[in-house]
Every structure is written in structure tokens, then in C-alpha cells.
Image 1 (cartoon, rainbow, N blue to C red):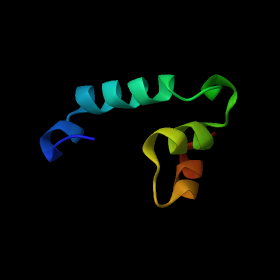
Image 2 (cartoon, rainbow, N blue to C red):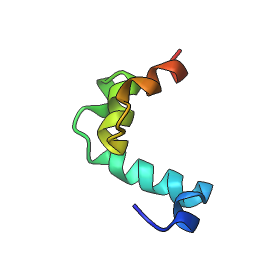
Image 3 (cartoon, one colour):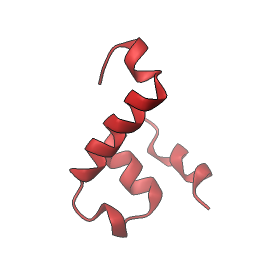
Image 4 (cartoon, rainbow, N blue to C red):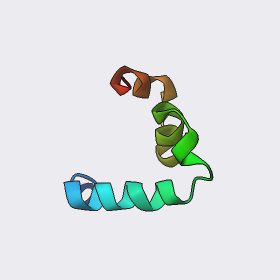
Length: 53
């Protein structure tokens, strides 16, 4: 979470995401889509799948 200015700043957004990811047990063994959803809690969790290769 943060202000619009913060969340659109790549350094802030990346740092925040990585801090959240460290809180997800077993993220290293999850599919990308599950770990991203666990951090970001998107209303559209399946949308991450298009970026997984």
C-alpha cells in the first residue's frame, strides 16, 4: 500500500512487493501466479498467468 506517487515508483513498488513476498511461506515452490496473488491480492488472480512462461 502507499500513495499513488509511491506505488507508481518502480523502486518503491518492487521493494514493497519483495517485502510482501518474504512473508509468504513456500513462495519459492509456488507457481508465479500463486505467489504474486498471495502478495498483491488482485481481484483478478488469473490475470497473472499471461506473464508466466
